[in-house]
Image 1 (cartoon, rainbow over the protein chains, first blue to last red):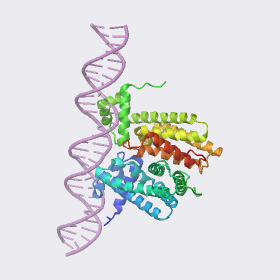
Image 2: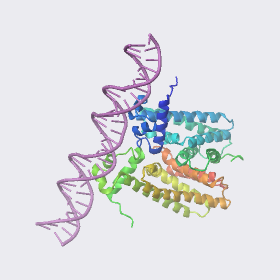
Image 3: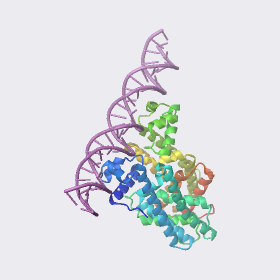
Image 4: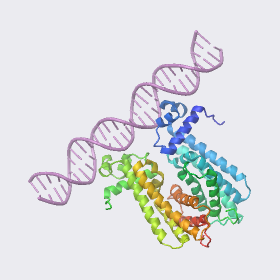
Length: 197
Length: 197
DNA sequence: TGCGACGCTAAGCAAGCGCTTAGTCAGCGT
DNA sequence: ACGCTGACTAAGCGCTTGCTTAGCGTCGCA
């Protein structure tokens, strides 16, 4: 069912992800990727048909892993505030610890083929729905004083996604602290009437 | 003092900005830029030494205009809450109405030469200081209940900058509404004790 | 009328690009 | 001993890249 990923494939995916994150899809050559994976340029094509299919494999894995993590976080609490906080925490933690992945996932969408783009866009929609759902539930129950659910969803997701852009490994800030702070910010944005923010 | 920008130069800057925003610096060819500006490929080099110098000209103008706008917004109110709101409003409004410029400004930094990057990084530091300043003042005066000034600065700026990524001209949302909503979110994030958020 | 400056183009150069081809070689079932 | 398979490489193909060169026409000014 799920296709296995060989050692060589994993090395190529890692190399491509790092290169794409640092220089962008168009700024990366297949020779760069091959060299970083310790292969000759031609070896790339034994495992992946094109450079774009490497990008797609990375983008797909990144989006699926994010969606899985957010749905798991969503189930970890039963009140909307707890769910929003847990979801934002997980999203930010993932974007910090996997910031190279997150950069490819969020900033290289335009380099995908139209057919691949469709698949990824559906996953992105599902991811957004997790945040929106928590926000809508809390607003319905009166737990949140939300100004506008659609716009607040974008504002919260923007704050989370942008972490991948500004985060620098050399920073003193621990990923957990950034994630916790982001969760508190999200609760404030949602207008949570409680003590924990 | 300030170098004048001829008609041809302006056409090149517009064409390059749109191309860089849509396909990225490395995904754009000098022939793309020339064609969009209605010139032959060689004409680009009459006005700009290299493709990178075009990027630098765009990036410099964008950052200087943002810094100018934020400092102006900062002077438009004298209480920290009013200043924070006005500054965020201006920043988001600029990122929405000029989202192609904003994409180049925020996502093509890695394509700048090291010397140009230094100049731009200083401007980015100054821009961040405007937000941080409003946040720090409001916290000192007790008007804000800010969890962590540094992290909240990043969270607010992240929300603002990311607008340029997700905003789509075909959206029904008016730029002013997005800007107003963002300003309210920023006040909430800052822990403003007042009615206007 | 002459002339240099300027904005521009047609043609093209060297380098680099994504990807292919032809072939090598170790491992393995028979 | 045999041929087959699959991972890999050296070489290179056709094309595109950023940028240059040589030259053309138009303008302001002497």
